[in-house]
Amino acid sequence: MEFKDYYSALGIDRTASDDEVRKAYRKLARKYHPDVSTEADAEQRMRDINEAKDVLGDKDKRAAYDALADRVARGGSPEGDFRPPPGWDEGFEFHRGPRQGPADHADFSDFFSSLFGEAERRGAARQNFRARGEDHHAAIEITLEDALSGAEREITLRAQTIDAQGHPQWTNRTLSVKIPPGVHPGQFIRLAGQGMPGHGGEPAGDLYLEVRIAPHKLYRVEERDLYMTLPVTPTEAALGAQVQVPTPTGGVVEVTVPRNARSGLKLRLKGRGLAGKTPGDLYLLLDIALPPADGDEARKAYEQLAQATSSFHPRQHLGV
Image (cartoon, rainbow, N blue to C red; front, side, top):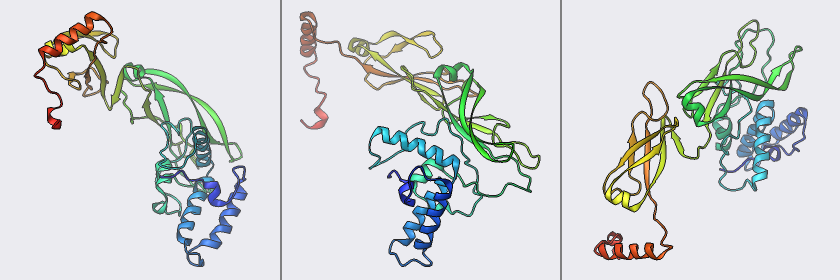
């Protein structure tokens, strides 16, 4: 999937005004519309300019796209197998609701779908009708500790609001968010009434915060389960041992490493993951850590081990 330059697709600069975006679109649409164009690639070009107009003609999507383009530019060329970087949309809100406009997004590119899903343009008139406000979505990154025990945090989001004259404007707003214990990646926290204002006296929409958990130095999160790499010595793995392990809540437990344990063996501590109706588990992945042979005694011990296990051929299954 390639990074799409929507400004190039319409032949405009990034500083182009909304009016210039509309004019460029109309000019290209007259040239490439399949009903009138004789160009060989008219159908594909029309899809490209429709997609560019959908993004650049929407203030919310354009702001999020511009921020992503800046991030990509800082990281190097966007050519090749592009994938949106994690957290690219954090701090932005844009509509991801059901299809409302005339655009057929089924023909839009994988690039568009990966960024906006079914986000739609907001060009319809908003006068003389009653409607509940649109729901908004945003991403929030929390620590594993917050996910385990719950917390209350303040977040700042850049959002589009409507002023007293009914004109859209960009503002930063700070919200207090209660994070329930046991929240897991991909879960949504709903803030009622924090979406777009309603019309004709109808209530405001809601704000849905998609939870993302920041990388942790010890634990990896998969839904409600936690994974940790547990280093053990060769003797602990071969002979078995009782070893101490830190738990995500701050305590220490003693676990049994079975005899003849191998690297990658998974030990399960039931209920030691994220809280919930069915709590997650903590999985310990054994990793045999070899002591360095950096002294006479250590080298001698390795030599004795090699003699004692000379009949062991770890590569026999390779046929060599």
